[in-house]
Amino acid sequence: MKSAFEMLTDDPEQVKNYTMRSDLMDELSDLITANGWSIKTAAERMRVTRGCISDLKCGRISTLSLELLTEMKKAVNE
Image (cartoon, rainbow, N blue to C red):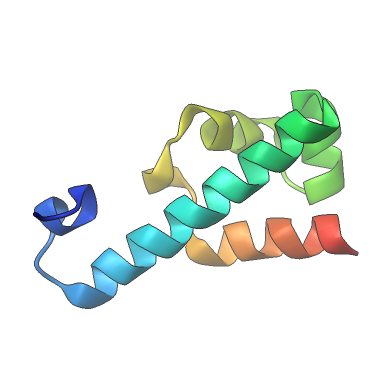
């Protein structure tokens, strides 16, 4: 059975990118929830706009690049 990402594209690199982005989005969203952060606090800690956090929490994968999600994770871990 194909994954949802495999149904979007036949390109294995794009599937891998979608999967990594999805995993990072889940991890960051869980971190925000676990810490009880507001959108404003999460944005400050991750050094992004509140709109980026809103996109993250709403699962808007197409608006968040792998590079941006990686930078958000790095900012939290500093």
